[in-house]
Length: 223
Image (tube, rainbow, N blue to C red; front, side, top):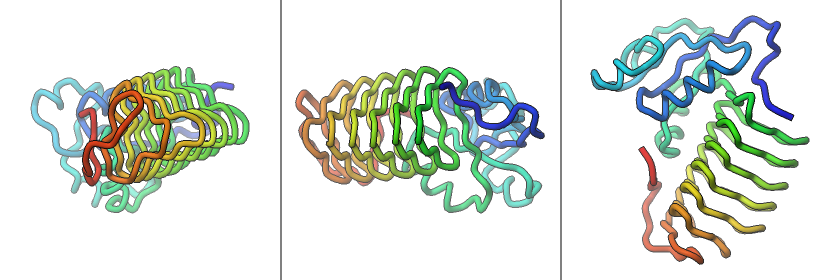
Protein backbone atom coordinates (compact mmCIF):
# COMPACT_ATOMS: atom_id res chain seq x y z
CA UNK A 1 0.00 0.00 0.00
CA UNK A 2 1.06 3.61 -0.29
CA UNK A 3 1.54 5.69 2.82
CA UNK A 4 -0.34 8.65 4.24
CA UNK A 5 0.62 10.37 7.46
CA UNK A 6 -2.85 11.17 8.76
CA UNK A 7 -6.56 10.78 8.10
CA UNK A 8 -7.37 13.43 5.45
CA UNK A 9 -10.52 14.34 7.38
CA UNK A 10 -8.56 15.14 10.55
CA UNK A 11 -7.42 18.61 11.56
CA UNK A 12 -4.13 19.41 9.85
CA UNK A 13 -1.03 19.04 12.00
CA UNK A 14 0.99 22.27 12.11
CA UNK A 15 4.64 21.47 11.42
CA UNK A 16 7.92 23.36 11.35
CA UNK A 17 10.88 22.02 9.40
CA UNK A 18 14.33 22.33 10.96
CA UNK A 19 16.77 23.18 8.18
CA UNK A 20 16.95 25.37 5.07
CA UNK A 21 19.15 23.54 2.54
CA UNK A 22 18.22 21.49 -0.51
CA UNK A 23 17.52 18.50 1.75
CA UNK A 24 15.02 20.62 3.68
CA UNK A 25 13.33 21.67 0.43
CA UNK A 26 12.88 18.00 -0.45
CA UNK A 27 11.30 17.38 2.96
CA UNK A 28 9.01 20.37 2.36
CA UNK A 29 7.90 18.86 -0.96
CA UNK A 30 7.02 15.60 0.79
CA UNK A 31 5.12 17.47 3.50
CA UNK A 32 3.15 19.31 0.82
CA UNK A 33 2.06 15.97 -0.65
CA UNK A 34 0.91 14.53 2.69
CA UNK A 35 -2.72 14.88 3.70
CA UNK A 36 -3.28 16.47 7.09
CA UNK A 37 0.03 18.37 7.26
CA UNK A 38 0.35 22.16 7.19
CA UNK A 39 3.92 23.50 7.19
CA UNK A 40 4.24 26.77 9.09
CA UNK A 41 7.82 27.49 8.02
CA UNK A 42 11.49 26.60 8.44
CA UNK A 43 13.73 27.17 11.45
CA UNK A 44 17.51 27.16 11.79
CA UNK A 45 20.64 28.79 10.39
CA UNK A 46 20.12 30.04 6.84
CA UNK A 47 22.09 32.24 4.50
CA UNK A 48 20.23 34.66 2.25
CA UNK A 49 20.45 32.35 -0.77
CA UNK A 50 18.97 29.37 1.08
CA UNK A 51 16.21 31.45 2.67
CA UNK A 52 15.26 32.94 -0.70
CA UNK A 53 14.73 29.48 -2.21
CA UNK A 54 12.43 28.22 0.53
CA UNK A 55 8.77 27.84 -0.56
CA UNK A 56 7.65 28.66 3.00
CA UNK A 57 8.64 31.43 5.43
CA UNK A 58 11.98 31.27 7.22
CA UNK A 59 10.98 31.84 10.84
CA UNK A 60 14.35 32.35 12.52
CA UNK A 61 17.28 30.57 14.15
CA UNK A 62 16.96 27.42 16.28
CA UNK A 63 16.03 29.52 19.32
CA UNK A 64 12.73 30.43 17.65
CA UNK A 65 11.31 27.11 18.84
CA UNK A 66 11.82 28.02 22.50
CA UNK A 67 8.90 30.47 22.43
CA UNK A 68 6.85 28.90 19.63
CA UNK A 69 3.30 27.62 20.29
CA UNK A 70 3.26 24.29 22.09
CA UNK A 71 1.03 22.65 19.47
CA UNK A 72 3.66 22.88 16.72
CA UNK A 73 5.13 19.55 15.64
CA UNK A 74 8.49 19.37 13.90
CA UNK A 75 10.45 17.37 11.36
CA UNK A 76 14.18 17.68 10.74
CA UNK A 77 15.10 18.54 7.16
CA UNK A 78 18.82 17.85 7.53
CA UNK A 79 20.57 14.98 5.79
CA UNK A 80 23.30 14.41 8.39
CA UNK A 81 22.13 11.76 10.86
CA UNK A 82 24.31 12.80 13.83
CA UNK A 83 22.96 16.35 13.51
CA UNK A 84 19.40 15.04 13.54
CA UNK A 85 20.22 13.09 16.71
CA UNK A 86 21.56 16.25 18.38
CA UNK A 87 18.58 18.38 17.38
CA UNK A 88 16.11 15.73 18.51
CA UNK A 89 17.52 15.95 22.03
CA UNK A 90 17.03 19.73 22.07
CA UNK A 91 13.50 20.25 20.83
CA UNK A 92 11.27 18.69 23.51
CA UNK A 93 8.43 18.61 20.98
CA UNK A 94 6.45 15.97 19.14
CA UNK A 95 8.03 14.83 15.88
CA UNK A 96 5.84 14.38 12.80
CA UNK A 97 6.13 11.39 10.44
CA UNK A 98 6.10 12.18 6.72
CA UNK A 99 5.34 9.39 4.25
CA UNK A 100 5.20 10.46 0.62
CA UNK A 101 2.06 9.08 -1.07
CA UNK A 102 4.29 7.42 -3.67
CA UNK A 103 6.20 5.44 -1.04
CA UNK A 104 5.21 1.82 -0.46
CA UNK A 105 4.80 0.58 3.11
CA UNK A 106 4.12 -3.12 3.55
CA UNK A 107 2.48 -5.03 6.40
CA UNK A 108 3.78 -4.83 9.96
CA UNK A 109 6.11 -1.94 9.20
CA UNK A 110 6.69 0.39 12.16
CA UNK A 111 7.65 3.98 11.33
CA UNK A 112 9.00 6.05 14.20
CA UNK A 113 8.36 9.73 14.97
CA UNK A 114 10.18 12.17 12.72
CA UNK A 115 10.92 9.57 10.05
CA UNK A 116 10.59 10.69 6.42
CA UNK A 117 9.94 8.43 3.40
CA UNK A 118 10.75 9.87 -0.02
CA UNK A 119 8.77 8.99 -3.19
CA UNK A 120 9.56 5.59 -4.64
CA UNK A 121 10.90 4.15 -1.40
CA UNK A 122 9.75 0.61 -0.59
CA UNK A 123 9.57 -0.99 2.86
CA UNK A 124 8.43 -4.54 2.24
CA UNK A 125 7.30 -6.23 5.49
CA UNK A 126 8.15 -6.60 9.18
CA UNK A 127 10.51 -3.62 9.24
CA UNK A 128 11.14 -1.22 12.12
CA UNK A 129 12.36 2.32 11.44
CA UNK A 130 13.24 4.36 14.52
CA UNK A 131 13.11 8.11 15.11
CA UNK A 132 14.17 10.57 12.42
CA UNK A 133 15.20 7.96 9.85
CA UNK A 134 15.46 9.41 6.33
CA UNK A 135 14.69 6.94 3.53
CA UNK A 136 15.45 8.48 0.15
CA UNK A 137 14.04 8.23 -3.34
CA UNK A 138 13.86 4.70 -4.80
CA UNK A 139 15.36 3.05 -1.72
CA UNK A 140 14.42 -0.60 -1.11
CA UNK A 141 14.39 -2.09 2.40
CA UNK A 142 13.80 -5.83 2.82
CA UNK A 143 11.91 -7.88 5.37
CA UNK A 144 12.85 -8.05 9.06
CA UNK A 145 15.30 -5.16 8.83
CA UNK A 146 15.82 -2.67 11.63
CA UNK A 147 16.75 0.95 10.93
CA UNK A 148 17.93 2.59 14.13
CA UNK A 149 17.29 6.23 15.07
CA UNK A 150 18.62 8.87 12.67
CA UNK A 151 19.86 6.40 10.05
CA UNK A 152 20.07 7.85 6.54
CA UNK A 153 19.41 5.83 3.37
CA UNK A 154 20.27 7.89 0.31
CA UNK A 155 18.68 7.57 -3.16
CA UNK A 156 18.80 4.24 -4.94
CA UNK A 157 20.39 2.19 -2.17
CA UNK A 158 19.24 -1.33 -1.32
CA UNK A 159 19.09 -2.86 2.14
CA UNK A 160 18.19 -6.54 1.90
CA UNK A 161 16.35 -8.67 4.45
CA UNK A 162 17.26 -9.19 8.10
CA UNK A 163 19.76 -6.31 8.18
CA UNK A 164 20.43 -3.73 10.85
CA UNK A 165 21.45 -0.16 10.10
CA UNK A 166 22.82 1.47 13.24
CA UNK A 167 22.05 4.80 14.85
CA UNK A 168 23.06 7.75 12.63
CA UNK A 169 24.66 5.44 10.05
CA UNK A 170 24.56 6.48 6.39
CA UNK A 171 24.03 4.24 3.36
CA UNK A 172 25.11 6.35 0.40
CA UNK A 173 23.53 6.52 -3.04
CA UNK A 174 23.43 3.25 -4.95
CA UNK A 175 25.03 1.18 -2.18
CA UNK A 176 23.86 -2.33 -1.28
CA UNK A 177 23.70 -4.14 2.05
CA UNK A 178 23.17 -7.85 1.49
CA UNK A 179 20.99 -10.13 3.60
CA UNK A 180 21.79 -10.34 7.29
CA UNK A 181 24.56 -7.71 7.30
CA UNK A 182 24.76 -4.97 9.94
CA UNK A 183 26.13 -1.45 9.49
CA UNK A 184 27.24 -0.07 12.83
CA UNK A 185 26.28 3.18 14.52
CA UNK A 186 27.74 6.25 12.83
CA UNK A 187 29.24 4.22 9.98
CA UNK A 188 29.16 5.28 6.33
CA UNK A 189 28.78 2.85 3.42
CA UNK A 190 30.07 4.72 0.38
CA UNK A 191 28.26 5.33 -2.89
CA UNK A 192 27.94 2.17 -4.96
CA UNK A 193 29.60 0.00 -2.31
CA UNK A 194 28.39 -3.54 -1.55
CA UNK A 195 28.52 -4.65 2.09
CA UNK A 196 28.81 -8.44 2.22
CA UNK A 197 29.98 -8.48 5.85
CA UNK A 198 29.28 -6.30 8.88
CA UNK A 199 30.59 -2.72 8.82
CA UNK A 200 32.00 -1.64 12.22
CA UNK A 201 30.56 1.32 14.09
CA UNK A 202 32.14 4.62 13.04
CA UNK A 203 33.83 3.20 9.94
CA UNK A 204 33.77 4.39 6.34
CA UNK A 205 33.49 1.39 4.02
CA UNK A 206 33.86 1.65 0.24
CA UNK A 207 34.24 -0.60 -2.76
CA UNK A 208 32.93 -3.95 -4.02
CA UNK A 209 33.07 -5.74 -1.70
CA UNK A 210 33.09 -2.92 0.84
CA UNK A 211 36.13 -2.57 3.09
CA UNK A 212 36.50 -0.14 6.01
CA UNK A 213 38.90 2.76 5.50
CA UNK A 214 38.77 4.80 8.70
CA UNK A 215 36.85 5.69 11.83
CA UNK A 216 34.73 8.82 11.41
CA UNK A 217 32.61 9.32 14.50
CA UNK A 218 29.61 9.96 12.27
CA UNK A 219 30.57 10.89 8.74
CA UNK A 220 28.44 11.70 5.75
CA UNK A 221 28.40 11.50 1.97
CA UNK A 222 25.93 14.31 1.33
CA UNK A 223 25.08 17.81 2.48
